[in-house]
Length: 55
Image 1: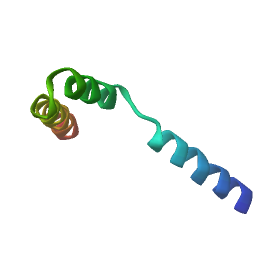
Image 2: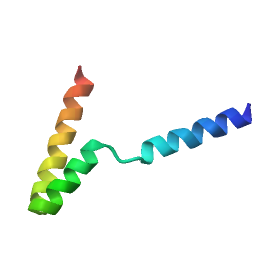
Image 3: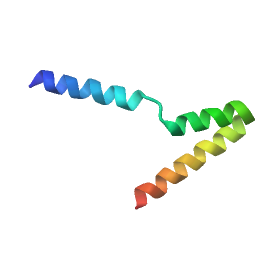
């Protein structure tokens, strides 16, 4: 039982720490166009997540 829980916790941790496509998009915009563009990209991603949650 404890081994299953430990396996679950470790798997969940690895999945949550892995960067996704949104993080790569924000990082790309920041490196190409500067911090303001990165903040705008991050705001756009979060705005999209907000509407996804509303659905």
